Length: 362
Image 1 (cartoon, rainbow, N blue to C red):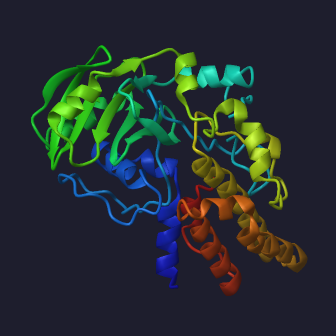
Image 2 (spheres, rainbow, N blue to C red):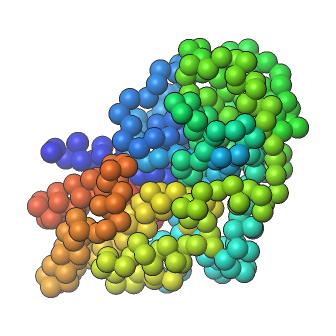
């Protein structure tokens, strides 16, 4: 494997990349979501031309959906706390802290998270949630699946609506409709691929996007069943395996059970806001552990501390045995990218370029 190939794998595998997402416009961000929508995705279905994405992103991650409906998740990697040790966890992955301003715990946290996002459910029978993920504040994705049909529900910050709408005008002429009592526009991509963009409500707006092969009448029938519900109803619709804020501490402990903990890594500060599928949750936690161990390895190397460098190397190489990564490996490429990065680093005795961006290190 060449350095160029490894760099690309590292860059492309990160499920969140909040720094990159923040720089993308409507078209580029939508393309990112499409590529992220299924794990081990090698080819993206042909879409209408859009403005170019700065970097081609390949999928190492999954998406989300509901039996009667679904809302997306917001995964935040917060800024490094003041005074934290170099390479320490960059911030919480659901529990409130002084940095997030949250209060309460457990179900209260879940209710608070649900109240701050769209809560749209699909009433048409047969649809189920497969995955949930979020990649930036007030933004996320869910995917509804019914047989070989799927619909993604993406939501974004309200102030991005005009940019997205302008981009969709390059796709087709908008056709007015109403979804869950909200004015919306339907855009035609061709090949039975449709999208409905709802006007903003409060701090966000939602866009629904079909897989290919749909008839317009089928899409209209589904849109007619979409409804907005309260936070409790939304939480009840989520699959039990989805990690919501109230489950973060328990699930993080499971992920970290057999993983060596780096110096300065605060396990109690692990926090993932919103709702996330186990795959995305595992990627977020292991990514930050890996970041911290690489930072410790680099620190020890620079200081000439061979003992500490060796300990960091051993911890990183043990990632091949981490249960969570082996469990995730059939679903996506995140584990293999992590292993390749670590193996190349140890072999060459140098940190691969771009690893921080690829792993989401802060």
